[in-house]
Amino acid sequence: MASVKLVGIRKIYEDGSRTHPAVRDLDLEIADGELMVLVGPSGCGKSTTLRMIAGLESISGGELFIGGRRVNEVAAKDRDIAMVFQNYALYPHMTAYQNMAFALTLKKLPKTEVQERVRDAARVLAIESLLERRPRQMSGGERQRVALGRALVRQPQVFLFDEPLSNLDAKLRVQMRREIARLHQQLETTMIYVTHDQVEAMTLGDRIAVLHRGELQQVDTPGALYERPRNSFVASFIGTPPMNLVEGAIVDRGSAFSPRDGAFSVSLGPRWAETMRGRDGEAVVLGIRPEDLRLARATGETPSAGSEARVDLVELLGGEALVHLSAGATELTARIPTPVPSTGDRLLLHFSPERLQLFSAANGARLEPAPE
Image (cartoon, rainbow, N blue to C red):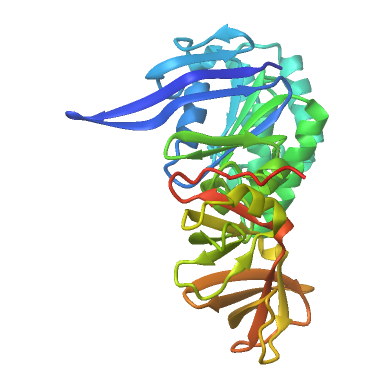
């Protein structure tokens, strides 16, 4: 096991006279035994970062340390890491046993030690019955377990996972997430896991590093990212469905928020009012999670605590539903328990001030209300 430390890591690709920065001055520390997830949209630099850690991509700038040792110029084979790829990368002509044993055989380890390591890994992953099968005789989930086993037998300091579940169906992804989480708990080994799926990130990571356009946006625990996103990008990316974000401005001497079209007004409560006093007209983005948006039937007279909206679509999820609404030009999503309204219904929205979040419209940074 080992810690991993990235100090000002950069990756710049050159295309003739032009340069394209894929990763920009990334500082990140991953503790010994931690499961760190790198998450972000396509092109954010997460897989490039993982490949630099693995030694599969050169580093344009900065320093990389594994177990306290600087490894910028160290070959991939000498970094004592093991990587699990998206496409399994199993040799089709070899059995599962041969695939798992291949790297150990190249190291010329004693045959008995190779057998012991492979059998131990197969037992941990519950694939002992698959050892004599070739990849074409296995399902996608079974192949991914073999790929995990191939990494496991090497007993590396660090495991690297590059979107390993993206080729599996939804049910298998859930099952394999549990397998990886269980494996981490059992081995207590440092793991770095790359995914674009924020559900995977939230359910797997001890901490999550959110990247966007090659820059680190926030690194924190799943709960902290969800409750206290550092900026509007993190707020919109973490959470399913994502946080409702509404562009508008502060009004009524800092006590309320109004969207751009003025279709409704949201009371901010005393804490926000104290912070926003004297800032009328300031452009901000209001955020509220779908589960914090309360709905009530409209009765023809809109009370001051509510704002009227129309139901555009209802997605029934079993015991709860996602209700998509429009209030003027603003589109919102609410997560509510059943029974659910019908498309076309008019409902009243209630925004709980204690659950509201505000972000700067200028740079997306999170704003803080006055302390209690």
